[in-house]
Amino acid sequence: MLEIIRERAQGLIVKIILGLITIPFALWGVDSYIRGGDKVDIIAKVDGQNITRQEFSRTLKEQQDRMRGAMGERFDPTILDRPEVRQSVLDGLVQQHLLVLEANRVGINLPDTLLASIIAEIPEFQQDGRFSQARYESMIRAQDMTPAVFENRLRQNLVIQQLFEGLSHGVAVPRSSEEMVARLAEQQREISQAMLTPEQYMIQLKVDPADVKAYYDKHREEFLVPEQARLDYVVLSADELQQQMVVSDEEVKKYYDEHSAQYNEPEQRRASHILIAERAQAEQVLKEIKQNPAKFEDLAKQYSKDPGSATKGGDLGFFARGAMVKPFEDAVFGMKGGEISGLVQSDFGFHIIKLTAIRQGGARSLDVVRGEIAQELKKQKAVKKFAELAETFSNTVYEQPDSLNPVAEALKLKIQSSPWISKKGADMALLNHPKLLQAVFSEDALKLKRNTEAVEVAPNTLVAAHVAEYKAASYKPFEELSTELSKRLLREQGNAMAVKQGKDALASLQKGGAVADLKWGAPILINRENASSMGKDALNQIFRADAGKLPAYTGIENPKGGYTLIKVSKVVEPGAIDPAKKKAYANQLRQALAQEYSSAYLASLKQKADISIKKEKLEKVEH
Image (cartoon, rainbow, N blue to C red; front, side):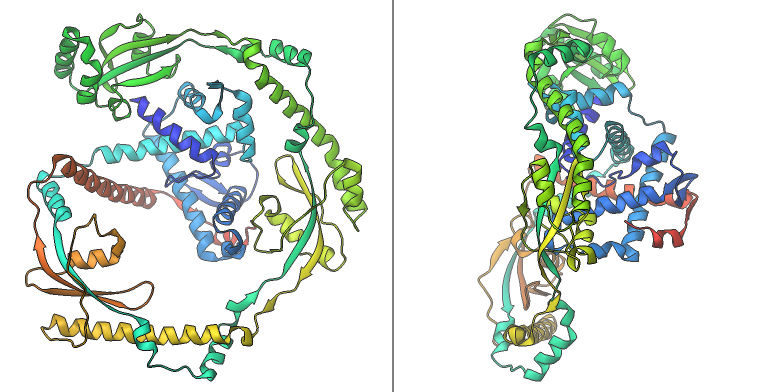
């Protein structure tokens, strides 16, 4: 049912808006693929579809922005210059084009009416409980996109989701496998641990000062402090200007009258449904509902095959015409409040529909939308004012390059100060733009003490900076680091000894030998759920240990140093397993198989496709 798309779209769209998109095939740059009209260099072709220099560069830029946001000062922008990273980005674009082409080939599409309905229902785009076009456009612009670009990206993501969900729905797991997986998952093992730590061996060791100095010389680049600058800067922003804008009641009324169609809401209806694949079963359920209409919600939870609404008693929420498939829509909009339909057949199966509410359409009054219109008019005025002042801003910082005072005085802007920043970026979003950072660390700014040019760091936001202080790149001196490095070397040597002793002890134990001085901890009973603190690798080792002859021994290097020996002394098989748990384990197995099928499917698409890549252009692309 399209309700599944609607619900998943709402979660997806919020992630896009917040810059937190996590689905596996996010279509960065898909708008240029859809348009296909830009006369730019071609880097690759996928079954005749072009991947352009522009698309690749934009994807690199967006990847850079995401990495910088996640890593802050630790982010090194030069990582995107690495050939393997560039190739990975291109591989992602190839994959996206393949999936879009395949979705089109098999006829998966998302009607404009449904896409509009999905977007209109997103709370982030609503004001006073209703969709706000102004809020929608504002939030999209804040992500440096146009509505057309955003809608194309959302559409492509949703059809690709449907493509892969079609695969996952076909995954079947034999009951014997379900039972085996559940029993393995519920099995418990009694274990004891013996820890060998670096500290146990460090007291036996000494570090030669010459080795410490050699380590410093070999790893000198690790101790490089990059060049840094502290800035004075000014910002010209439409957002700031908006706070200064004044809108009269007459202007609000005029806008309302000129855009009256925008505030006309279509009639919406709220319905619940039960979706059943087989007619015979649907008729039986319908008969039961007619005998007792109050059981509708319970029967929806029990029988409906629409997972998006079944858990909610079949509730689909409010929707307007054009949001649902035609047979379903015709039935809903032909019913009276509280009425329950007969069987309604669609491509998805047989529906039993209950009309639960009607929201009459009509125009929203001026009083209701007054605040929304005022904000929109202020924004429009601010953008216009920004456009008027932008040239003055840019010219003044360029023509009077020795100070930011002239532009600050001319436009009544505040000169702000930054903390120390490096070429790798700043924690402040305004100063984190690659072009601005490049200008800050240029010869003009550092040696000639000139203002940077005005840089558009975000839509309708200009920043110009002046270097107030500068620190050249330098290495931390050996004298400052010698004590720390001595401890580091001592621990590395202690860790190497602990790991060696641990592996030797494990080999002896597995052969039936004894190992002196091992201090085993108290035995504990664990399963796969209650031992997450041990770490995934240790847990896997414990449950892979051969339990045919007990005690069994295994061991693992610790991520934080040292070695852990593990003794498995008892295996406790589960009794009767709760059906809900068994079902959850079976679902996990199906998801794992679905992922494998999806990977194989994608590999087969790639194998059959005609893909050509111009390696020389990939290497030369700037981001």
